Amino acid sequence: MQTKRRRFTLALGGLLLGAGTIGLRAAAQPKEQVIKILARRFTYSPNQLTLKKGIPVVLELTTADVLMGFNAPDFQARADIIPGQVAIVRLVPDKVGTFTFLCDVFCGSGHESMSGTITVVA
Amino acid sequence: MRHPIDRREFLRLAGLGGVVFASSLGTAGCAGTMSTAKDGGYDDFYFVQLSDSHWGFEGPPNPDAKGTLKKAVAAVNSLSEPPDFIVFTGDLTHTTDDPKVRRQRLAQFKEIVGELKVKDVRFMPGENDASLDRGEAYQEFFGKTYYTFDHKGVHFIAVDNVSDPRALIGDEQLQWLAADLKQQPQDANIVVLTHRPLFDLYPQWDWATRDGAKAIDLLMPHSNVTVFYGHIHQEHHKMTGHIAHHAAKGLMFPLPVAGSQPQRTPLPWDPAQPYRGLGFRDIEAEAKKAEFKLTELPVQKA
Ligand SMILES: [Cu+2]
Ligand SMILES: [Fe+2]
Image 1 (tube, each protein chain N blue to C red):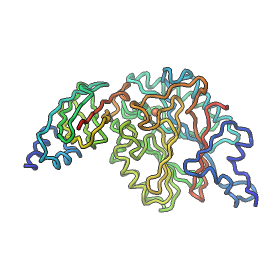
Image 2: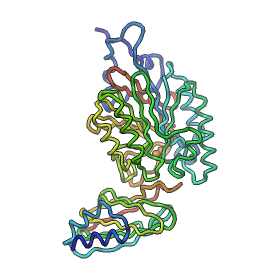
Image 3: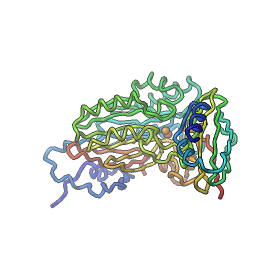
Image 4: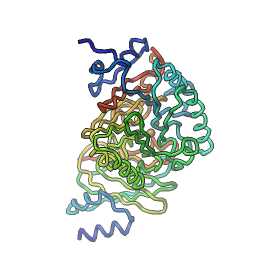
């Protein structure tokens, strides 16, 4: 069942991320929550995520213009968001608090402010 | 036994005000240890590192945006003893989406630093210069983005971790680096110059190089490696194993300490202490000892 899930991820986005492994480990956990995020120079919408500790999340990321990045270093979850494709990031909110995610692909004058927050509640 | 006066001490005695000694690695305390110097001077040398001049930036964090780089050039020109050479570790210009403006800024920057009396100047791009066109405009003005040179027994390697907007050095360049390092003896005195930190300083603010660990792995077998970089607009000293990494101050606006505030926004200009947090450094190389002494210098004399 775990293998199937993994293949499914590959088929979806063509991008399997480091975070996928974390997702697998937590596969016995309750249902995953799917969140769609649209990136455009120089914002994400939504840019504030509130997650529940222990509930795995699947982020489906797309970009409205140029190549973007999504990086949540505290959860070792990152992806390139390629125009025309859906990038999948699996993330397990394993700690409570507020954490930064950011665009880590230099995308223009304004790139430096392109970030958001993940708030994990108990 | 009296310690002979070394060159840095000399700078201070010569009245170059505002010299701040880099002490984070504890080297400043041993300024007088060169007791074996022979008559007729030393076989060491020094070079100057400037970084992050962000030419073209405008805004409240620096009301003297058009004057600061020029003051730094004048400060370097007034050093009592000229450095052997000068390095600029990237973000020469502030980013712009307009390729024409980018070239204008690069041209103006080049003209200003053309006033440096020392003509041996080595440049590197930062993401502001190169990430939006993969270094195309930068190369028109300054040539290759990664290269090596040797100086008095020290092997310098400029590493480009910005031309790829994903902050990757990339496999091609890593192979080049591996091949170059192969030519070097295990104990060669190696200096890496680059823009971004090669280690994960604070990825939450993009203070990292995505494949920087691969470069560090390649450098690891060499016993004498020192990295000088920019990008974070403040002094920072860190060891990864036996490799020392030194971040330089910038010349446009200082940035906050990693994680000290929610956003990575510039520190405000303080009219009571203009140019605070800006500056450049003097790096004294002792080729035989594979040791570097850092001296932080202000843009303007106090
Ligand atoms: Cu930079
Ligand atoms: Fe910079």
